[in-house]
Every structure is written in structure tokens, then in C-alpha cells.
Amino acid sequence: MIRTPLRPLARILRAREAGENPDDIEAENRARRHAEIQDKSRKRASFRLWLMAFAFTAAFGAVGMRMGALASSDPTEPRAQATGARIISQRADIVDRRGRVLATNLSTHALYAHPHQMVDPRRAATELAAIFPDLDEKQLTKDFTGKRTFVWIKKKLSPEQMQAVHDIGEPGLLFGPREMRLYPNGQLASHILGGSTFGAEGVSSAEVLGMAGVEKAFDNWLRDPANAGAPLTLSIDLTAQAAMEEVLSNGMKVMSAKGAAGVLMEVSTGEVLAMASLPDFDPNDRPRPALKGDPSDSPLFNRAVQGQYELGSTFKLFPVAQALDEKLINPNTMINASSPMKIGKYLIHDFHNYGGSLSVADILAKSSNVGTVRIAQMLGPERQQKFLKDLGLFEATQIEMTEAPTGKPLVPQRWPAVTAATVAFGHGLAASPLHLASAYATIANDGHRVRPTLVHRRDHPQGEQILSAQAAQTARMMLRGVVTRGTARAAEVEGYDVAGKTGTADKPRPGGGYYESKVISNFAAMFPVESPKYVLVVTLDEPSVTNAGGGTARTAGLTAAPVAAEMVRRLAPIVGLRPAADADLPVIENRTPADLKLVTN
Image (tube, rainbow, N blue to C red; front, side, top):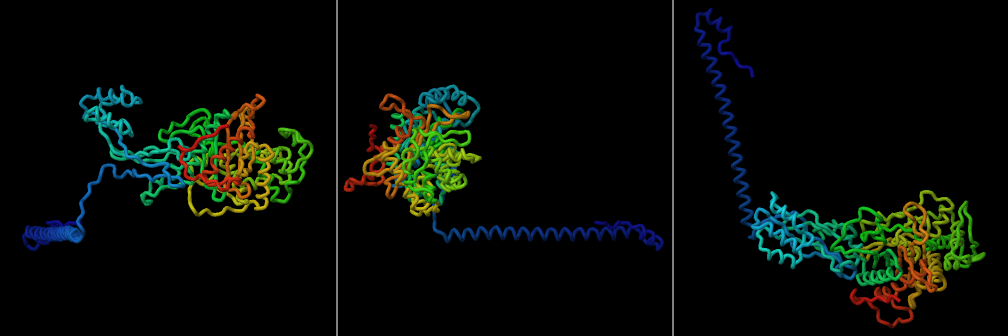
């Protein structure tokens, strides 16, 4: 802003020449300046008054509108917002296919302390250490007598523990309500459920998060208020799960195995009715993960889903079924089975020398490595790889568990002739028992791809056709011969027409090569063979049993097959299958785990 001077020189000089008083010029300019200042001040004051009037009008208008809205609404009691209300503590239940509870919530309390409110902190530390032996009395004393104003003591209490703490009578010991996750069946289906832990915590609520299994896979769904508390329904049958775990546990002991796994799958839908891995754990008190050593030594390791095993002769079904589909063979086709067979610098042997030739049916029944390789050679490596890939043996299963991606099969990067030969009889490609169950279910399902699932629902889209129904049916009938006259005779269960294949694979050393006396034994079965309803896979890790001659037996026919037979005897009536010879017997459908007893002979 350019200000006009009060005594401009030009005007002063002209005034003096005219004989006028120069002071009049200064007075005139001063008066004009004061007038301009007063005018600006008047406009500024007017603007402020209008602004205040608008603000008061808007404020009183809003108050009036709110009063009108309250006057026209129904009266309700106001509710105070509780501390920790932002923590989502509700979590939906998990139930089996019949609605029986597998995981639920239990109201409990957490224990915390305000040391500055304590009357006798040292006595409180001593009393708490007596109630909770896992607490360190010295550390509690240090926390209570130091400068801390808040101390978490226990995240969850039983009613008895809560009463014992209350009896201490210390005002600085306080209880906070919360919900905890409860697994009422203890260790049953522990690997499937996985377990939970606390997330965000407050003194009046705590967030429950899934740690593994379906609890973690469905964590967002289980905590979503939009589901209105609807439970997550799994495909698991609690009674079948209890029977499988009991039979598998006893079988593992009888066979002196390090570990075991089992899968029972519905053929038409891929729904898993039972899946077990031993040793297991209690999800109510989930152990810490192992930080060193072999991961499979930890009870948290899920052998059925995460185990990457060479599954041995159970793979022999795949080249046979594929060659049947390609019309390269039929069950009576004679194949050269002379042992040993040389591929490059490698020799392939059979467990027994079967002479010159065997029919395809006998190759499967007697489990001839050489005969299977001859069939695989008819297919060629490219067709062999494509079929195994179509069966899902090159990728992780899509089952609804966080552990599923860690069980991706170990597939050879190169596929020369010797690899094609060894993969044909189950060596060189490592997959999980769940992969094996899914592949066998595909053949049992007339060649339609079956994908495993843990969710029980009515609508299951049919998988793509990767094998003709005729080839699948023929392959199944040859599997029946493995049980009636082949290596799996110990798996025969009267009335259920079990068809299956044994598989014994040497266990690989961590540094390369194979152990001489450690194996993985498997038995993969489907029943009843004419129209299979279920697929069963049993896997034993390092089994060893004394045979009739006093020696040690490790083959699947003497270890996994008899355990699988006992499972069929127990599981078939539970899932509603009548024995063919006793069609008029009542079907057992609603037995509880407490009703189940194992016959181990």
C-alpha cells in the first residue's frame, strides 16, 4: 500500500508562492487519512458482526433440529461404551458334519495387578506362586515392588484358580472378563483344528486369533459379525475321527512306528470325514514349535498334509490305469517282468524274481517293479508327467488349512528315463498321504478329478474327467485282486470288498541316500469296490513288527494293511455302510467316542 505524504513538497512550494499557509495542506491530508482508516474499521466490524450472527444462527439451528429429532423418537436408555469395546472378542463355533461341537467359546477371566494399590505385595507374590506353580515368585516380587503400575499375571483362569486368588484378599489383584477358545474333545482332530491364541488384549476383553489349521484358515470368517454367530460346519465326522485316531494309535504301538497318518475321504465329494496325524497335541494347551531338529519329530507336524513321502508301490496303479485308458494294455496283457532290468547304468529289481512274464493284473497283485516300469515305458515320460499332474501330484492340495502349501510334492526337476522308471513304482516323487487319497479317489470316482475339502456343503461341482470310466473301473477290479490274492491280503474285511494297494518305500537320509532299515509303509484303499463310497489311506513312519519266523518285517502288507483292515471294520458301520453278507444288520450311525473300543488282534 502506497501512503500519500502529509506535506507533499510540490504543493508546499506552490502554497508559499501563492502566500498560503503550508500547514493547512498537512491538516487536510491528515483528515483524509483518518477518514479512510475509520471507513476500513467500520467495514471490518460489520463483517465480524455478520459472521457471529451466522454462527449463532447455525448453532442454535442445529440444537433445535436435534431437540426436534429427540422429541419425535422413541425413548431409549443410553448405554455407556465399555473399555475395550473395539476388540472383537466373539468367535463362531466349529462343528462337525452332524453339528457336534469341535471348538467353542468359554467365558473366563484374566488376572492382572495394580502394584501401587497393593497392601502387601510380597505376600501376594508368595500366594500367587503357590496357586500357579509356573509363575516365578522372585519375578513377581520384583514386579510388585518396583515402579510398574500394571502387570499381566495370567491370561485365563479356571473358576477354582479365580476363587483361590480371590481368597488372597489383595485389593491390587484384579480380574478382567474375557472369552477363551475351548476344544471340548481335547486332542481329537487337533491337527485339523490347529488351535488359537490371544491377539489384541484389554482388561475387559481379548481378541481370539487362529494359530493353525482351520482356525487360522477361516480366521476372518469366524470373527466376522456379519455371519450372526453361525457355526463353521466341517466335513469331519467326530465319531469316525475318534475311531480312526484310536485304531491308528494302537496300530502305531503294535507296529513300533515312529509316527502315523490316516485319511478317510468321501469319493463323490472329496469331503474328508476323518484325518489323523500321530503323535498329536491338545489344542487347549498347544505346545511351542520346535526350533531345531527334524520338524516331523514335533507333535505339531501334520503328517497327513505336510508329510512329503515317497509313497512306494501305491503309485503303480497310476501307470496301469493310464495305460488302460490309452488302450495300450488290458488286465491279461503279458509283460516281460524278468529281473533285474537295466536302464542306463542303473538296475531295477523286484522283491521276488517272478520269472519271465506276468499279466498286468499279476504285476499289480504281486507288485512287480520291473513290470510296472515296462508299462510306464509304453506311455513315455511326457504322457506320464501329464497324467500325474492332472491327478494333482505336482501341486499342493487346496484343502482349507494353512499347512497345505507346505505339503507341496517334491517333484524331480529333470525327467530322464531312469526318473520315469522310479516314479512309476513310487520313488523319486514325494507327496503327502492326502495327495495319495485324492488321486485314488479320482480313480474311484470313475476318473473325475476329486479335490479334498474340510467344509461340509451340499453343492460339490464335479471335477474334470482325466480318465475314462471304463479304465477306472478296470483298474479298481485289479486293485481288488491285490487284496484277495496279492500283497494286501491282510487288508481283507469280510463284507466290504476292499480294493487297495500296498506301498513300502525306503526312507531317505537327510544328507542323501536311503536308510537300510527305515521305511515308510502305506496302504491306499477304496471300498466297496463295485461302487466305491470311500477312500482310505494309512501311512506308518518307520514301522517294524516281528513276523512268524521271529524276524523283523517292515513291508506295508504286514504293517499298514492290517491297520487299514481294522479301520475299515470300525469306520464302515459308523459312516453307514452295511456289510454285503449281513445286509439286514442295523447300521451304526450315532455312536459317541466313548462307545468306541479297539480290537488289536
